Image 1: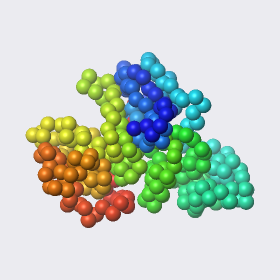
Image 2: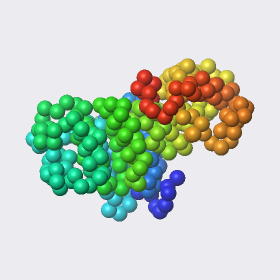
Image 3: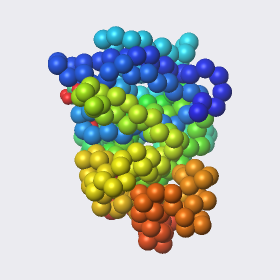
Image 4: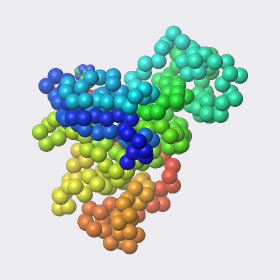
Length: 298
Ligand SMILES: Nc1ncnc2c1ncn2[C@@H]1O[C@H](COP(=O)(O)OP(=O)(O)OP(=O)(O)O)[C@@H](O)[C@H]1O
Ligand SMILES: [Mg+2]
């Protein structure tokens, strides 16, 4: 739910096609101030296109995209767009000398965490893929955007940097729309989940769920018939869904009713029972830290 005021961005019946494929078909949604939304979906189903439409980088074929007046968006592109002809200091810190930025605690933290091993006067040309990604991210996080749109920010980050980024984003007051395949990250950061996927007729739709990835998996599994042997989730089978849930703070994302049923061992449906069992089996593993071996959402 938006915390206050009108939405920062609204999509009203937005349709976008490339060639014959309708990636998004009359999609309506909005991002409120301070909301943190995770976007999931299979490769090529239109997640980046959705972000580009929201940011006004791509125009819809029909429908309307509106942004609040003067909205400042910080966008982390899925691709690397860093300028090779500049130094890290120029790209990340607008060329400021150390004494000009070191007094600012937020800048220091971002530089110390993301660029600990990158000399600021190095040329961007010659940095590794991971170093370049961290430069892009550092630059973005130092910007006072009201809405951050991040397309796969955790790519090339190590586990510690992912954990720091999650904590940083939760601490910020800016709204966030983030595409990632990192399930731990989605659960740690996001309060809502949008799934981009082809609808029954093949044209793309976006379904909205409350909560992070675990809550999304649970809601989605519950929408399937309980006697079905396969829960269609990114095309994976039941075993995968249950394994996927293993490393989640599942109960934290559940509704009050579901938490009560979990606590009293009285699931409402066979699906819920299976999910609770899977969660209990892995409770010892869940300490809130990212688990590199159990992270990919799809
Ligand atoms: N500018 C474009 N011109 C033509 N086709 C495009 C364009 N942008 C995207 N597409 C196509 O639209 C589809 C969705 O692309 P998009 O990048 O939005 O998907 P995605 O969900 O972000 O995928 P991934 O998980 O691989 O990042 C793909 O088939 C892609 O090739
Ligand atoms: Mg993409």
